[in-house]
Length: 110
Length: 112
Image 1 (cartoon, rainbow over the protein chains, first blue to last red):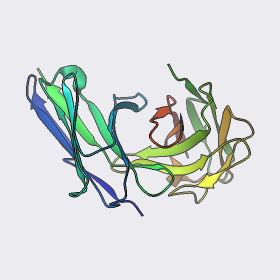
Image 2 (cartoon, rainbow over the protein chains, first blue to last red; image 1 turned 45 degrees about the horizontal axis):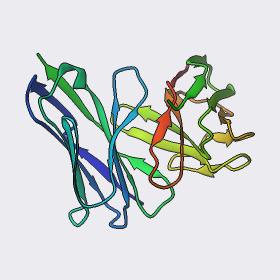
Image 3 (cartoon, chains in turn brown, green; image 1 turned 30 degrees about the vertical axis):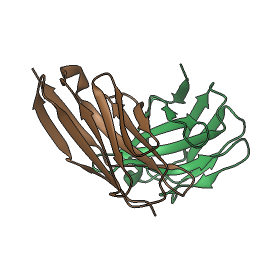
């Protein structure tokens, strides 16, 4: 069964900092990888996805994927208070559905 | 924008009572999902469905049943609610393979 782990559990960074969130998975046949963002009291919403090794950038957000290391990450450049949220990674392996990590709670302080 | 709605948004139930949580999607997605979210556990999949008439067990199905009477509607049923089922429940819909999931606003369930 796919095991998805996130680190750190929580993070406090100053406004303008570069933030890095990590996700590891156990199924080497995993094909699809997402980051979801969930603001307090709201529903999770997909932020970015990546399906092949390498890097993908969208605005201030960048995903890195290294399938051989069973690891992918989300990097936020110039972090803003509005980025404060719970970040969930999700992985779809050889099974039929996505599995989510336990989340990283990010707080960006002015 | 994909739309998923849930009802009720808040529910207080008594131990041993029956609870039904409802979900409706207007995205015409085949796949629908029920999750619960508890601090420290992220989103855990309870049941999912590939289409009308189908239900499948997720990672934590014990104590829950599901029903998918139509493409648009997916229900989660707690026949005998227990305090351990106090949680926030999210419904989601999604397409096949690489498609993301779209979540409803959640239902906060308290079982006393």
